Length: 237
Ligand code: C5P
Image 1 (cartoon, rainbow, N blue to C red):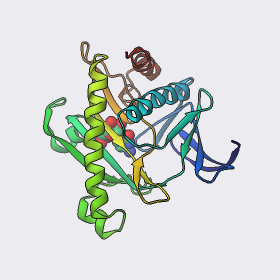
Image 2 (image 1 turned 180 degrees about the horizontal axis):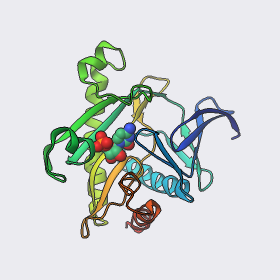
Image 3 (image 1 turned 135 degrees about the vertical axis):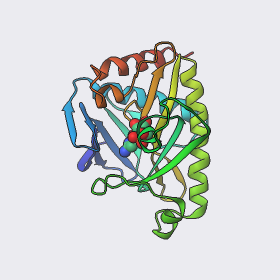
Image 4 (image 1 turned 60 degrees about the vertical axis):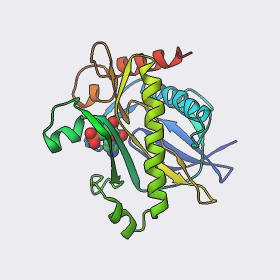
């Protein structure tokens, strides 16, 4: 397979075409952003950490029969994925109150949420990813009703699987964001990356953040937390 031209630059990744129209080439950058890209910093080694963690989590979900775009890693920072039409919707799942849920509702951080909370956001840098509800998604044609049901079910199942996996390595999955895309045949599968950039992870014993909150809240070297996550995931039996 050969790398083609740069198709898109995200906040922490570059996406390239390949000589196969059904396959895209993802390159993970040594870069962290916060406040939807308004704060940006180079972080050496971060690309490799995200790539490795995402690889392990996609492999785990594949074993658990969750369809996803991940194909294979071709270097420590590069991977091949299935080309999809990405839905302009971010699916956020919350098990415990944190981040924007705390600032919006002024509830106690880490309050357990029963039932779990699912939220949709419209993917738009220009608009700062606004909250969007089901009928807004339908009226704007971003997805159809059956697809919304599927997104909610899939996110719930992924939440159960990842929460369980992390609990076995003494980590609590607080919340996370997923993205999905449509295949040429019209089915929807999990896309994007699965890393501490997109999920809040807390050490069950110490309560320490092991995710991008370290960077967002200027609590030190984020790669220390990411290394810890990777190290524990690598030792899952
Ligand atoms: O900021 P907020 O509390 O809404 O974030 C909820 C979860 O979704 C966090 O784990 C955060 O990392 C993730 N998220 C993301 N990308 C966004 C917004 C949130 O990965 N654009």
